[in-house]
Length: 97
Image (cartoon, rainbow, N blue to C red; front, side, top):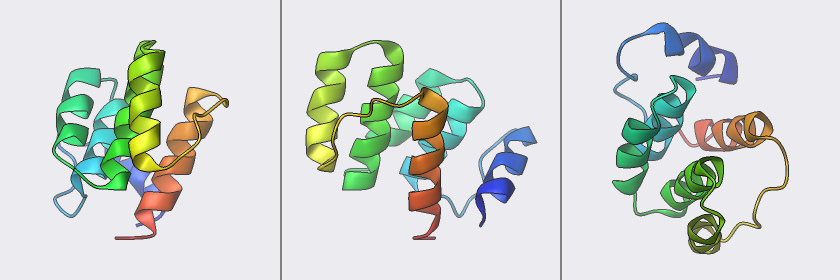
């Protein structure tokens, strides 16, 4: 799936079944549903899930919790815009589908 296909499927009511929990979390965030995004990211115990989790807490404004999750993801805390980070995560995680 390309980034554009991922963006295009945001018009659907549910995320595509083939998405990982981390990508589904990013998908729900793209739909504007932080709660569902967080619930989905929490189900993924991998570094990918931790990265999405970190992004969501940064977006929420909880920098200390975000720092914890960035550490779990082995990523430096993002300093770019939320859109830029969302896209970076999506592009990276879509490569593994």
